[in-house]
Length: 133
Image (cartoon, rainbow, N blue to C red; front, top):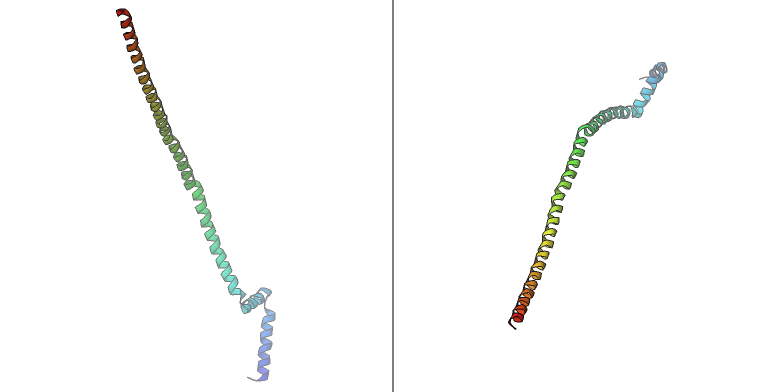
């Protein structure tokens, strides 16, 4: 290529660039610097992120509507079951205490009865001796 052709070619390229709009020039610069590809990937990633965020929101709504309601209901039922199942345990403990107390009373009354029977026998013997004398 001759010197003149090279200058002419450069001149034509400059004219083409000058005739471009601002956005076209910016686009050329971005491509030259490599930011266009970055921006494109960034936009695609943001769109994907938005789609995923929508799915997350749908899952959260589903959790709020159905699953958390069921979990709360189950917790309430478990609490009621625990309190109702602990009542018989309390009743059994009270009955055991009552039986033990009555058993102790029975033993004590049996002991007193034996003492009184012995005293009664002694008194009968004393009366018998007094009648004989």
